[in-house]
Length: 300
Image 1 (cartoon, rainbow, N blue to C red):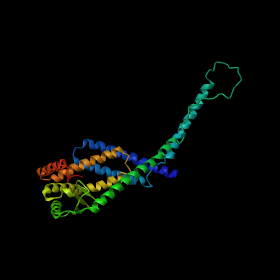
Image 2 (cartoon, rainbow, N blue to C red):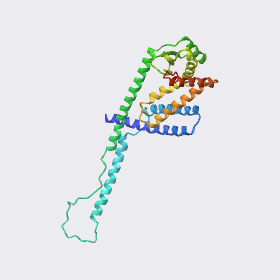
Image 3 (tube, rainbow, N blue to C red):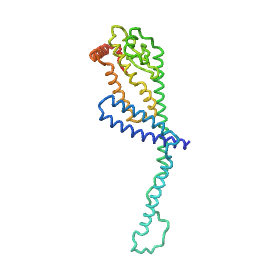
Image 4 (cartoon, one colour):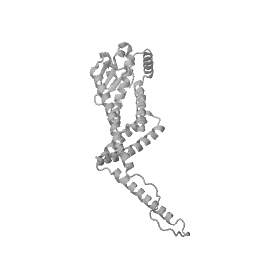
């Protein structure tokens, strides 16, 4: 069991060190990059790099050293240093006053002060707690992902098919060579969402799907179709796979936040297309509907 924890700790240490270096480089680069498309390319490459590191560091052929070997060497060096200091202290105690003759009988029971040595294996014990801490947080993250997937499945299961006119609106946005996503409506959501990367679905709020809000519905469909076309659902799936591993890493959460912002900017730009005025009017209508506590169709 201790050997397994030691191997797991060594793997986590390699992964976190290399992942931190990659995330730090990406975060520093994103500060100086202004174009959202370029930032998304960097973020996408960073997530793929983290996934690659996860696989490479888990391979048996990956060169790693056991934490026991590393810290036992440190403890041995510390003990050698303590022994050397103890000998120096003993020498100083013996020859502190070489010119003074002491006629008193020799006593061998005098205590010799030495520096306290570090408790062996204390650092090893601390680092052996790393996999236990990771397993606990990863378990919470997996439970969170499972709960979100279950809620999405329930919403999708209870959703109804969208009206024909909204289906035609979506068909006019999707190119003929692209796979047509399924369009449904649900009373359990307050904003439009796209879900399921391998079989895309677009869900609209039931209250907002009426022909009087056709411009709003079209803007929402364009926005969610842009997410699907840009591969945002696949990127979201990759993020969720990495979340249990880097759930305690602050740079990972900052990267996720930046990805969300850039995805929304690019989706809005793609949805506006050659008709930015109409899209802006749809956004104004959405803001008005939100102020009236209506269910807005836009969102991520």
